[in-house]
Image 1 (cartoon, rainbow, N blue to C red):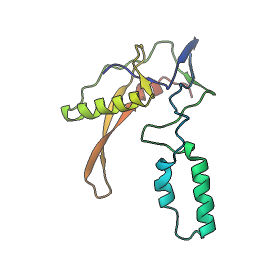
Image 2: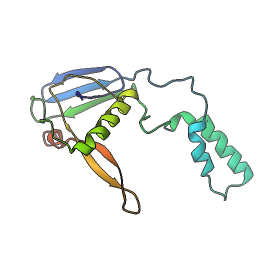
Image 3: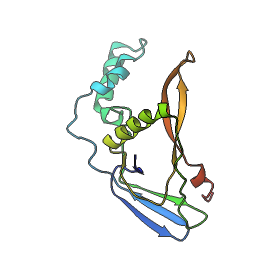
Length: 164
């Protein structure tokens, strides 16, 4: 797998001394024709029994009206066109970590997660002098049984060179 760029659209990168600024803009990843509210049905199904019939009706109408603020799936995280994120580093050199080896059992899970977030428009192929490693975290359910691992990003290298 190649590197991943954590944006849903075009990025402009400007270096201003020790500051790295990324202007994040949204793509057309959200399909505005999706008017159905099936993805909020679980929310409506879990409304408390203590609501009156009128309160339940009003709540369901509200949930349906604002259904676009609820995630449609695990990687439906939304995007904005009004944010500029600046990462203040203590030096001008990019932070790049060598790739870590992962247990063979986790390689397919890592590849599947990257493919899902690529399909969701969260990341894309890129070539950059900046890099951080994937860290696989074992998860357990409430009973303590192992479940699918969680893929995270280790930003310790970057964080150690950020101004506070």
